[in-house]
Every structure is written in C-alpha cells, then in structure tokens.
Picture 1 (cartoon, rainbow, N blue to C red):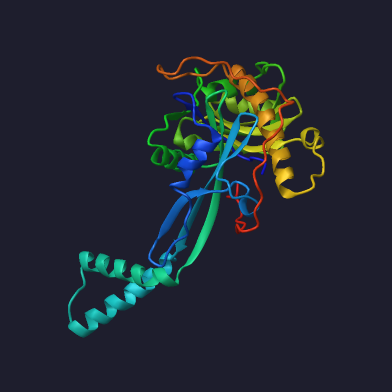
Picture 2 (cartoon, helix red, strand yellow):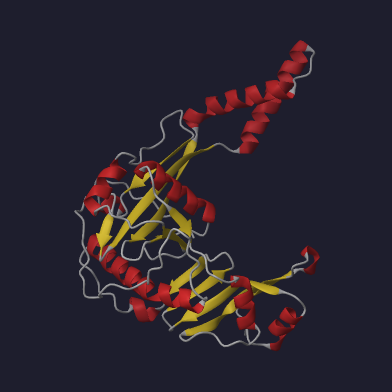
Length: 334
C-alpha cells in the first residue's frame, strides 16, 4: 500500500469530522457496481479491500480513504464497425445517404445494445487526509484523476475546500538552478534523471535517465536555453522521487532503510497498519523540508499559514475490524 505518486492539496479549512462521522458520510456514496445499463459508477470502498468493511482507516491523526471506479469497456473499433455495417445496409436498401445526426443516433443505439454484454474495468484510488496539517495527499500520477477524487469528496460532504499545493517561486527555474550548480538545500541530493525542455517548441526535449546530472553536458543544454521540467531527487537516503514542475511527485520510492523497520505481521490488517504508519510518519517529516527547500508554500489568501509538523512516532495505529466478505481489487497502477 506504499504510495508511489503524490498529488498534494491544501485544505481551505480544518477537517473537523471524526473518523466515525466521516465514515457515516461516506456510506451515503458507498461504491456500488455497474448495473446492466450503467456506463460508469464511482464511490467509496474500504481501503483494506477484502480485509475490511470500514470506509475510513484512521491512524496517528491521518485518515485514509479509497475511491473505486468501475467502467464498461466498449472498444471504439467495435462500435465503428457495427455502425459502418448499419449505415451501409440502410444506404443500399433505401438508396439514400445517411447523414451525421442519424449516424449519431444509431451510434448511441449500438452502445446501449452493447452495454449489458460489456466487460468492466475496476480501479482504486487511495488518498489520506493529514488532519493536523490540513493536507490531503492523493496517490495518483494523474492530476485529473486526483481532481475527480476531490470532486467526489465535495459531492459527498457538500463542501470540501481543497486546492493543489503551490510554492512561491517557479519550480522550473529552481530546478534549473540546481542543475546549473547551485547547491541544494540540506538533506537533498540530485538523483540520476531529469527532463529538459526548450521554450521554443522547435528547440527539442532532452530526457536523461541514469545520468550524472552534474556533468558538463547537462549544463551545456541549460546554457543553450533549456530548462528543467522534471528532476530526480533523493532525501536523506530515505526517499527518492521525481519532482515535476507542477509540484506533483512521481516514482516515489521508500528506501530499504525505512522498510527494514518493518516486522512480519501476524495478519494482513496488522501489516497494513504498520506500513501505513511508517509511510505517513515518513512523509510528515519530508513535506515540511521539501516545501522549505522549494522556497515556501504559496498559500491562498483565505488560508492562514500553519507549520507542517509530524506527530509523535510512538502513537499507536488504530486497526479496523477484519472481514473476508469483500472482493479484492487491484489498486490503480502507477
């Protein structure tokens, strides 16, 4: 359950629902699978999958949730082939041309006819709310999918003010300065990957993988006008990641020094609790240092400044009841 991609959101007001009250609100939009005529359904599912029934998982002041989507798969090629056959039949039988509006109507009829027989695809999207620090972190490489989860929270709760975390300066300019030789903040070092882009669309894009980013070749590209849009970083030999110019974090990796603290748990729920606690506590220490290294967060005018702090490590995780009645579903691929 270790997050691999992060989309960070700043809450516009403190999250004051208790886990129990939050659970009750989510129940109103609990996930229900597609019926024969549904193209797509979206709702809340247990973060523990088949091992739990609760829609929230609370530990150390953090609340994890899981949004589940099921959608029908109707290949566009199949629809086009059926439509072409139908149009050809009508034109041959009635000696007339079928125009666009009629084709659109026939296409809709074909899709409706295929819906009950279509296969479905199910995906999970995980997020957790950092109640202490007014943050919500979504495990997604796609900003659009993260926005869908935030939008679903707004629908469920009636109001859920949250905006993507932004910093005070241009992240692209800052990453470019680091590649040009400017020292990185304490505890951060360059990784081996970056992407450089020229402001002129004809100037090209350079993708560097497993390279020495302090080499003269990289700096020559920057001298020629290219700037960084992605940059691999390492933090304290504990985390590695690729930072993007839009402040999203991809390819997040928790190094062995963290996972070596794991113990073999007796059951999946205990293992989930352990992994979850290790992850959120590590990220709680990482986020304030990252925002400081990037020059500070650019907060909306209606959001007061609040230092990001980590909770005491000694606080125990809170498990939820187990259940074997849920069907396991694979999490959204990174």
